[in-house]
Amino acid sequence: MSEPLLRAVGVARRFGELEALAPTDLELRGGETVVLVGPNGAGKSTLLSILAGALEPSSGKVEALARTGWVPQRPAHYARLSPRENLELFARLEGVADPRAAASALLERFSLPDGAKPSGELSVGNRQRLNVALSLLGEPRVLLLDEPTAALDPGQRRRLWEVVNALRDEGGAVCFATQNLEEVAHADRTIALLDGRVVDAAIEELFA
Image (cartoon, one colour):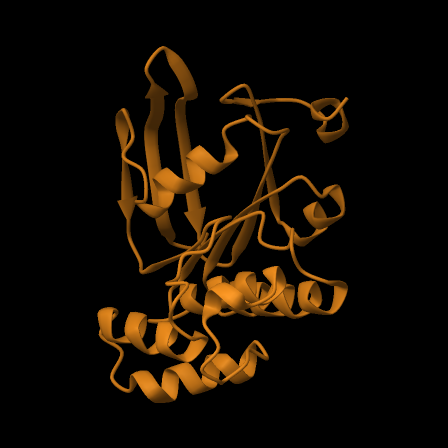
């Protein structure tokens, strides 16, 4: 069995009286893709944010055993900077040896514009592709994605899954959330959430 790359033990989150996520265990291992499914408010984004270290759990802990890349739903870049400027800035923060070369490679890989146009003026699809490109800086072995294809056209979706599958095939781990049932086929393991809890239910029942 492949080595664990990320482990969550009893992670939970409350917002005042609201229990957004009940205590949850999750382990991601190299060579697998895991999908989180469930309706709006099920706890998918909360769980992913905790796994990424973007949100502190109210209880429990996360053990990050490998470098992790994070693709949230909302833009994770500076709107006033161009795609290249964002990539070079975050590359330096990640300690990448050659930020300019890393930025050039990702701009080409994701067909992003290499001009001075601010990222905030890009199309929704291009902003999401920039989000994904930023998550790959530092060559993470774990990739967490929150509904990554919602703003992408069919061609862009195909290229995204090529990236995801390549990372998994190279021994990395991927965990993504989706409400698109067709995308479940990209995963090796499915975790269903409802009202902040992992449930044993058919996927179709969650959206009934």
